[in-house]
Length: 444
Image (cartoon, rainbow, N blue to C red; front, side):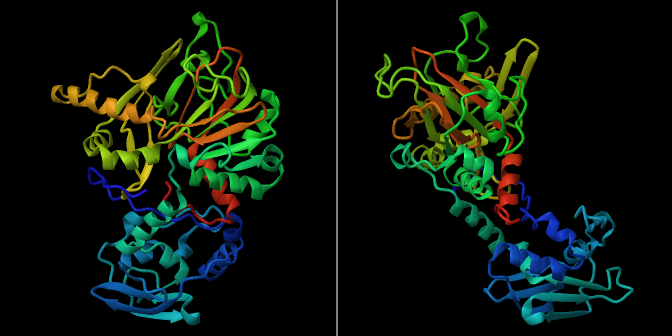
């Protein structure tokens, strides 16, 4: 998903995750770390073909054709020998380094390009000897081409979709028992969430207590003022504190826009379903169906079809809030957010139900806001984008709440979902750990 970014971002550089902590704990030198990474990943390791000093930089050429120039101060700052051997935290104080540190006095390529050795004189202010793993240098190159590669890699991992591209039959499915017992199956499910933002877990239990150990496999349950694990059983009119507790149809939205750190995953386990499988409600829709919509695909199309609306929602933060007894939360964020330093989408955040009063826009923005809001909501309510998935009892849908919008069709009987939230950091951490330490490129 590569778009034109409306405004220049702060150029925060993306780091690649390191290999499994246990491997690092068993290694004290970068040679061991590099070999461990390659053993874990099974991927072809990078190899250096040339390393020289030029223009007060260390220029390195790699066997794959990539070329990178590194500042001496950056190389000293990233000396792997300065990491704590067990916590892997930095022990070198960057603030003590001279930005104009001289180039090394000697450079050599070792072990057929697997390592680069650098040496400084004792009077240079740098450590006398530093060894870098070629694979690490290649992955962490800050050359423009390398940064673009990392962005492209994330784009390749995602498959955006419209309604015609994804229905219940095509959603990735994993059984509850496999989620509980098989790390490989859990990994497949988490990878599906990166690819399409949707996963269906089958053969689920129908109690809150039995649901909990399954959802906790995705990560710690995110506590909010709704609690940890909750249900959506309809409430009486005087008890409703959220539209989820009615029988009304709900337009597609992302949850908890009013939280600054909105949860990364939302899970709905169907424990009771209204009506019959092919029953229709008063609007002629399948009764009690879950609506799913890929916010990233919608944004792609929005940029092409309505560029002014795209620009507006990428550039102007909106406010959302939630007010109930003992609770008053509020956040302010753009509808369209990007990965730092890129034009790659990071989050789609929108919920018309929770918008706070629009008292923060300039007067000349008010009418454009309502024009753009109509455009956006027309797309959010279009069957071109909405996939209708009627869950059966024993099925749980898991959605990326930073990407996939959800809603439902109206129902008349009794329908109940046991659900919870999982933090973005937590489910992505789980995927990295199950992937042998291999990173999700540029995903944070």
